[in-house]
Image (cartoon, helix red, strand yellow):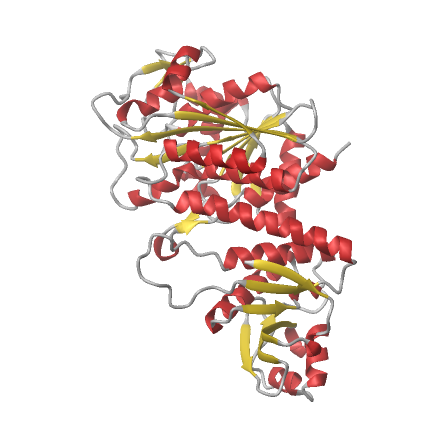
Length: 493
């Protein structure tokens, strides 16, 4: 998708499709009012008839033959003067889907002019780019039949609410975010027979070449020499070789980096503790944390953020086999701590434990791990928010605020010492599960034992990283949250 800007009035633009907003109670946006005047009151008449009520995301296509715009899409944007960020994003998504249904090659949108409560005009334009790209995203590279209705290839946004420099900056930020989210979704949507640990390593190297990153890939022998017994234990049942990917973006000299650690289980069968067959196909999404790390670093590099970031991705499959770890086995992690394996389906925390220990050698200013870790988090928070657990309240507040800004929300859960007792083991320093109660929290308690020398936060993205059922596919979350977090850290003194 190519994005451009315009300062022209809506009634002067010749285009296949023009998008303008309509508020509730028959109130036209400024762009819709300008268009209405040029069309002798036709837009107002349509609204007054009740054909569109102005509810967020509601759309009404109007075909014109005597206007410079061949088609007009009226889009509901909510109450006048009280358009909330989530409602605005809903309107943007509805508009993009309505445009796609019209089978046009390009369109012009005046939705960035809508005043959004507690948000700037730059935010509105950036979100317009990002949400439009996200809504028009398709993963059809593996289909052999031609797509009947291809997505538009060009979009022009009104930038009349901003000065040219601010508008270009917002456009660049929105475009970078769109590309990052699409990159994450592409990686996660690939089937596990294609997106293997080796494929992720190749993608990391390719990203390094195009973005100027330092990329290191640790192989099995390297990890054995280091003593990464937890990560390698998970890989014992598969023929696919495990990898540890390390990507370094340097935008701020010798300052301490932010370490992002993403779970990269490219397929999770549960191992010997085999998952039930229903929906096991969705376990190709168990590397969404890895995809998030690669995509976030791509955006940081593209935006040339003055910050240092190191991304670590422990990548493996988790399969049953003659060499697979078994319940009751004890393994030794890179930190030297021993772990009793009570459930081989609690593998994500094992590979993350070694990656977190390895990350400490970079002396990071903060460590954030991102993982589709527990089904319990899906039960607790659904698809609305990722779970947040941290040993640093200030870091948690930063992440929460960034998520609120990007409408990519997270919600804090406690990490009290009392929960740690559930990980007690008779035979090792800890067990890898702590029972059914508070499963999301005890998983974070486990990880906290490998991040006790750093400011650390854990994001459990099991409920937000992908959708199941008829809409099955990766969402690209929480890339927007993390990009905003890095942008803020980069601006901080």
